[in-house]
Length: 53
Image (tube, rainbow, N blue to C red; front, side, top):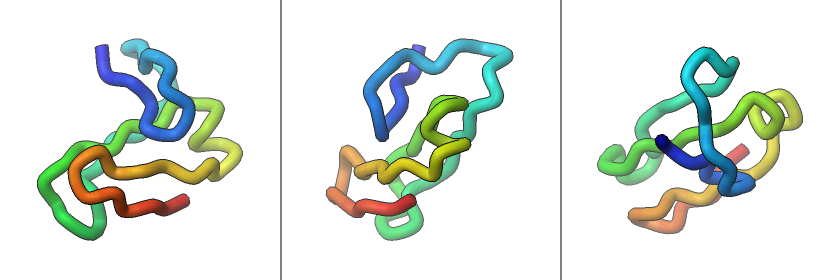
């Protein structure tokens, strides 16, 4: 299971989460759970350290 890059909890299938490539390095996959996506919480790329909302 992937983990949310903002809060660290597991992202479950069927959840209204989002997944996208890091806008800066394009090499890492960013996951945001339903709660963090809805609140626009800041995430951090595990590969390059880029922070976004």
